[in-house]
Length: 108
Image (cartoon, rainbow, N blue to C red; front, side):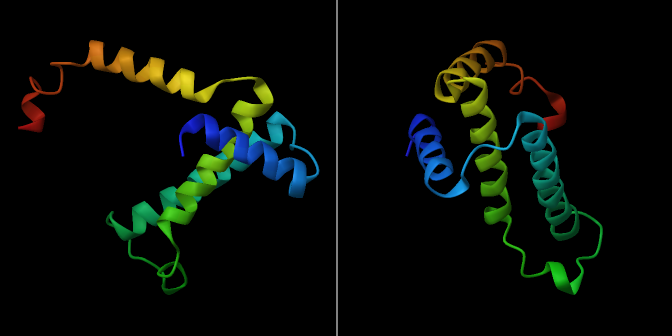
């Protein structure tokens, strides 16, 4: 499923199950909360903090999907074609960073 199809699927879900979109500020707060959950898993599972027993069964993929869902909601409600924006961003990064990382001594 491409990003545009994902935006449509989220919009259909909102219409059929969610009643309406939360307002943009509420969704921004939700996005922050979801990113925090991802950060908690990464910090404890892959970082130096010890993982609490209650966090060991948390699914990183599920939490990343929560982030994606809210990002898609924000894109829908603000009229952003995220597929178009992502494709453009990838082109910009490719042109700008073509040699940058290959020439970075820190990455060798």
